[in-house]
Amino acid sequence: MKLRQATMADFDHIMEILKDGANQLAERGVDQWQGEYPSPDQIKEDIENGWAYLAVSQDGETVGAIAIVPAPDHSYDNLKGRWLLDTNNYVVIHRVAIHSNHAGNGYATKLLTEVIDQIRDNYLNIDSIRIDTHEDNLAMQHLIDKMGFTKVGELHGVYRPNEISYVYENIREK
Image: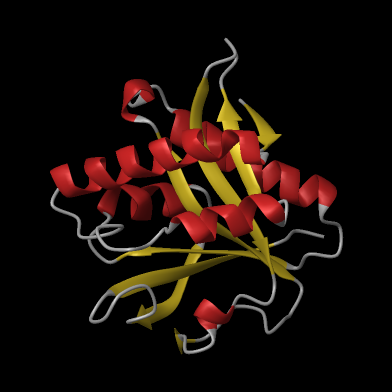
């Protein structure tokens, strides 16, 4: 698995991957990404700021998308919980999706492994990595746990009214 930084030429492909991800969530009865998030404007912002990446498999297929967003992330301003590390030196993993055409091949694990490795190798001043997911997205919660993150709290109504997201943190090993 390799990460490739996205350009505006990738915009439609990223939107397709995220829409497919929203459809997969809906099929599993998860109400995540069923509204305006992630919006086209959000994805354009990700690309323009260099936060958007595409996941490319060993055989050269684009299998997924992800965003690595530097602090501060104001979606966490009203965290109900407590960070493992009180720091402003963090990055957030957002908008993780593997296209359904590539599901069941372990790409989500490979993608998060590659992202965590890239953050540790290239963001030397980063103390922690943060991520969140919908309270009903059990598959993502399992993956986040498997990757060594610790649940630190909840977000209420950040992405949509009445929506609860679980928030996790992984401390960078020095």
